[in-house]
Length: 438
Image (cartoon, rainbow, N blue to C red; front, top):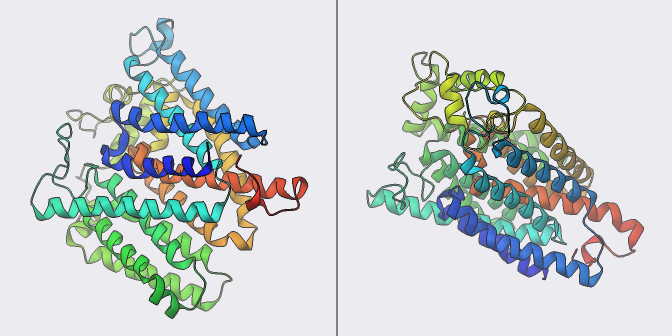
């Protein structure tokens, strides 16, 4: 199994996941997992035959975190728990919907496998460039689908199973926040592909100006989605990218950053429907996310240590609903990825998994931050992760495979780079990028 084959699998995931309604449905995650598993098995076999070094310790920690989640989700679904542990619900298992556990287990395995495949790439710069082109292509495809459906006045989703938000500018996602998240990832990728070649601004505009044009198209598509959380995440990610990619702290850097913020803010106000949605945040009589967040905290306090299992959030929120929550609606998410994780896993397991993965990610990013030659790559990775973190605070849709995939790719590539730079001086006199596939 070569690095090229693994790369093709990642490109397939990037292009396919958004088309499959974000990849959340059981059949979709099964389809996405099949090539990933095949590629991972082939990589492990190749590694064994060629006697290449084992994965970095960081990969082991990621696998440990995934294994803990896998084991605990399995235990939650077993009908062996005493009634005192399942209160306030009288069920035989901690999981309120144990039938959905296999789907969630497959999702956990898919996440771990994606990170491992990305960590298997042996050249940060070249692999990141190829994957960024795939992200841009996927984003442009979704923007084209959304534009075509809007022009034809057709429903905003091609899938009959989705009935909400069918008239939104969302491509095949049928969710404005998920659509905007892909537009943001494609926007950052365009900025990286335009900025990466060396030369004057005139030369870049002449030879690589198409990437800037695509960035503008994706920005306009993001604005057309009318996603408040998505636009806020895009702006914050752009600020991080500009701040990190430009060297020093001179006046030109501050000027570029200020101009970008003003331009993006002006674009928001120039979009009437989007500015109206932001203005609605000031209405006290408007149903806001604080009601569902308060309900989620209430549900968490009722069962802080064990959680409610996969697909148990709706029942938990309905039981612990705050006075302002519309209980006629089915709240499948608390509109906060981290609250969703706590409700599913419980606080101890959730914090343990976050601690393990956070240690790996911060170690990898700290290594990249101290290297001047990887400044553009570091800026892109931080922009994507910042946008993901910001949007995850306001919507649980960031757990969709198609939405979390760019963040997983950035984490895996950063881990691989950290491993190469840490072992290259001791293991070989050649550059880290020339080492064999591992």
